[in-house]
Length: 398
Image (cartoon, rainbow, N blue to C red; front, side):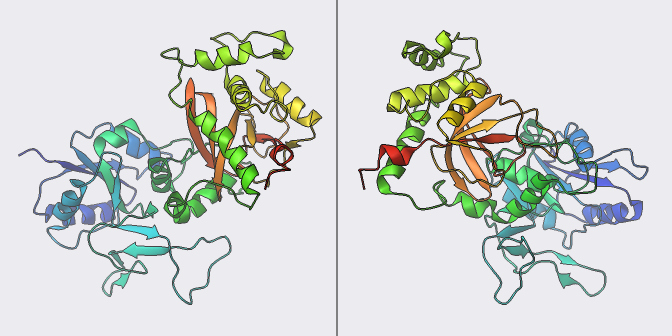
């Protein structure tokens, strides 16, 4: 019978790896093992090594294991494989993870999110100690998995390799996979010249503890506003969402451009072509449909749209700013660390809502289609925000 599961381990300590091999040899189910020898530093990061190994995996499932892991019982692997068989292709499974909650009396470190570590793992030699805060049995939904022993369907990891640019060291590659599996868009950044940790990595550390917790809540307003203003802001987002099926591949995006071109006066007297970039055109088309061109100017140029929001005194580029649903977000993809938030804007979208520390956006011309994006608040590529004065449009309505 063909084996269904492959264990991948990148190791730099041969003795520890041999102990893993010995515990695997005692398992009562078949498996494949791919060891990535890094004793001489052949691989610069775990992501590089694991991606190279994944390309060789031919079984239905794959598990990524640390070199210092030993399986305590002969049916441990068979049990794990049985649980994997109950999962979908995009699901991830591990032996330890974190869930929302708090341990009574436990003091939080600065910046630490609420969370409880679930684990059946024990650590140490001789006298073993529990590695988690709560034990569990069976499968439990969690926010993020520990990287010591986790995996899923091989097809998923072949389609979605570990991010070798973001995770260019030996940490957080599992967290990054959990975030991506949960629908988050994770950006890469260049390293700072000093030893400072990048903000995106700090956010990832925080997000590991809270991502799923926020996924249970709707994206929305971080502060209270009037019901009429909230309704108008939601109208803008819902109008934008009505275009989610539009894409260049079937020409359905042309309806957005046609709507923009039919509006008078035509910005800069320029007729947008179907082959042009159309992110700003998309925002403008939504504004036209909602009858809000007085507060969301029409324009096909991101940079010119920023100028127009500036003329309305509705431009914000504070890195610490938190937007509201219906605000307009601009990006500068060429921004480099540490960033000064003043570069040339080359993309724009409409804020769907926030759930700290993330903002969800709907954009036209994202991968040639209308699509969502979820990114950290304060992300280095955020150029700033246009803030339509929705309150002025609803000031006589409760």
